[in-house]
Image (cartoon, rainbow, N blue to C red):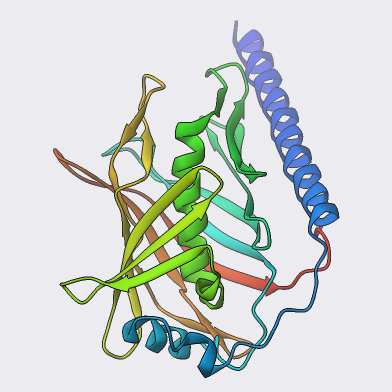
Length: 281
């Protein structure tokens, strides 16, 4: 029996590794396809005149972030050390995160992986051509997550806007985006991509530092597989300078349920590359 148990665990571990490799191949193939559709092209240098139409606090943030005087990136590659929690009170799972974003036609390819009881699993988020999918593959201990459709795309459009605000704020001058100041002094951002329109408010200090991003247009995946509309925020801190640009060094992802807040993830920045010419294998 002990030998059978060991062989079963070993088999599941190998199966899990194959699943993870499959997800990574899907991620890499998606990024390569995106580069074929959106080859890197030099962006225009963002000037002070280009941001005069924006709310003052947003102008201050763009200056603080080092966006003014540099080309507007057409894409970027981000790498994080992530920690995620499946449910309140559970132990966090460490997982590396890699993603590519494109801004001519909004696209996002995101992958992460970890293990549960030594069984590897991997997840991929892909947003391209105005639609999104989310998949999780794991050895047969758990059902595979396989989501797509308008609700997921709406939620992932919020994530597109979030990535843009945090790591490519120069693109907030894009005509697909509208910005205005709220009565509380925060900045409201609206993004339209195809039939999906989302908004968020930005908490920007008087010094131009972005503290938080809050949206009511995102959805949480429930344990029963349904999608629940929940307020979502991403507080950020520990700003880093990379080639003259400032980016958040740490951020969290929080769902604000009526029954209480749930911080389900946090991310520690490792690296960012702008205007990447192709996928990093």
